[in-house]
Image: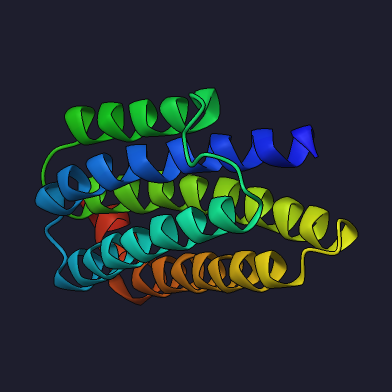
Length: 160
């Protein structure tokens, strides 16, 4: 079960790092819809960490993170985008791009962990991980909707 535990510790660190990074992203937005989407996901992230705590309890492993190099890189990239883009739709588009990369990493990770839990016949753990997986997919879809509704159009006009 060490690969499974390792993956859980990795995503635990990642979610906690994201909990610190999301408020910075929210502050940098100019779109009300993007602000709402990121604020909503910040609240979901808190619940996802609580859910991971339950998973660790169920498998009788101490809830602790293991540095996630991938998430650290994605957060660093998001910071660089926010620093290099002027305030407005262009920065908002960059924030969406960075946030969707984070979501895709989380979707891949939770999908894998859910499958591991199923293989290990950890039914309750599988349900908890699947719930988070569905939330991550919904967050990704919401970011796409926000991007398509106005931000990408506005950003392309700013670039012209």
